[in-house]
Image (cartoon, rainbow, N blue to C red; front, side, top):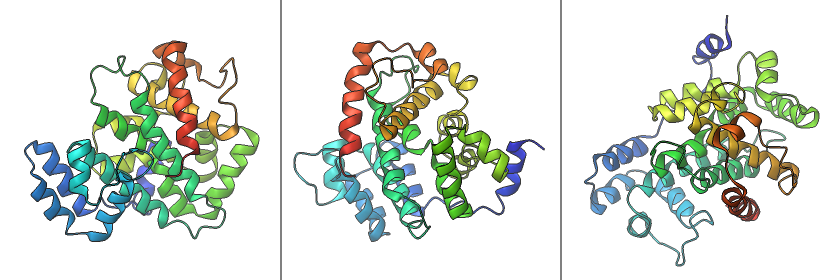
Length: 279
């Protein structure tokens, strides 16, 4: 039985969260292309706590607004209606990790930081190799590429925390260790979550393959792009981001995308700023 089949079988036991109704309705409304601010307000009024989380996201360092906003409608008027989809998904991720804070050893701020910074890096890295995919979709791929981790933390709890600590200490491949010890990986679970939420196929593909550095990520520009973001995050977390040879970059995505230093240097500077900023 392969690991994808195991992940599918585990799906009935894993607590894969449903996409909240307010997010589903908001996404449908925005995708329609003619949504009015009054409609947005009516939808968000269905779930005031969720709207408050989305407003917190809008006022975070991620968007760096010059003047704080007091309503989601105000944020949309400044950032654009399509930015609401990203804000809503960030608020959803924020909600997911808040529910996991009681797990011993779990570091919610670190996981949240990675998700937020990855979504920003996905937009900041050059996108001319990606075939015209929208910035909103690239941003969503960055934000949710590790969404399977939340389900893994929720299902396996402290066992998964210890596994992550072990991998960090040894440098072993995370996905291999997850499959060997738990029977599935966060990438396979991430694919299940993305499909359950009816997310774009690009998000499903990235969630499943961003660790396949010598396979899909060496051939598919979007997956390589997000794998690049992941490598930058790893370099930030272990203090290697300033290594002059940048040997921490994975060969497959690096050769496929072939970013020039003049393209990469500003992104790395911005990454360090975002990593240090509160989110």
